[in-house]
Length: 303
Image 1 (spheres, one colour):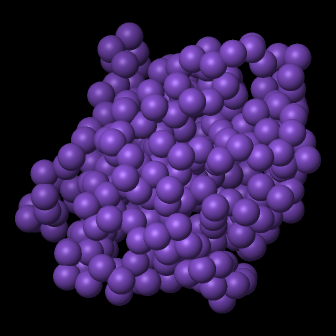
Image 2 (cartoon, one colour; image 1 turned 90 degrees about the vertical axis):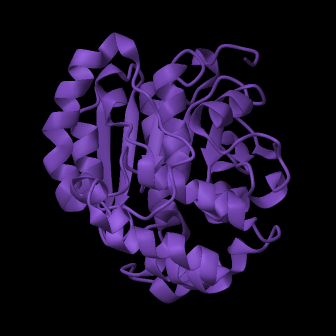
């Protein structure tokens, strides 16, 4: 798996969203590289990991990334947040802090998933099981947050449309998803332009990998991980995000221990592109406050 390393300072791992690659973080990386050693991951099937043998599945990705990076906080944007949350919950000794950016523990509205709208969609490639040690608490949290997901998750009908469109019109579907990511931002044209420039900058992601990513976004529910999360976390949302509702992120943060929530008032789904200074300040401030972004508190070596 390809992981670019740049910058100097305490290590920080960054994981990108669906159909993108580590290069999409360029504006944020420019602002953080003077304070952190950045490990910019290309997820399997994406960017320079296009031909990676690692399965695009939560445990497999976490294991592969963890084997290549030092002990460090993980920052995940959108789909990347799924892997970051999984890593922080299952490997707290290696992931001492978590930043979730425009990413929720469940992406699609739960209330309709079992209904007819998604009845014809493919069987999910992967699903995430909750840690057994927290089963009873996790069940309570899942029940308590079901209403939030029903109101704030992405419409399953829209999501199913992307899955169908990927099979019928690969490029057109990517264009529509990118447009949705940019929609709402106070600089939607700039964000759209940046995302368009990045999506194929490291080659076209295989349609199979994109379908696997959609399956994960549709099927994975990581809300049961929240009550047992041992590490501090920061949840950064864009108020104008039309992919991940900021209210879903606020609700998730409320169910995690030692969690903070920051809303980028004029940001969309990729606020690190249009509001990079604000996002960089939030990330750096959080890591320094939790001492997870200082060399003194980072154990040496890799796992």
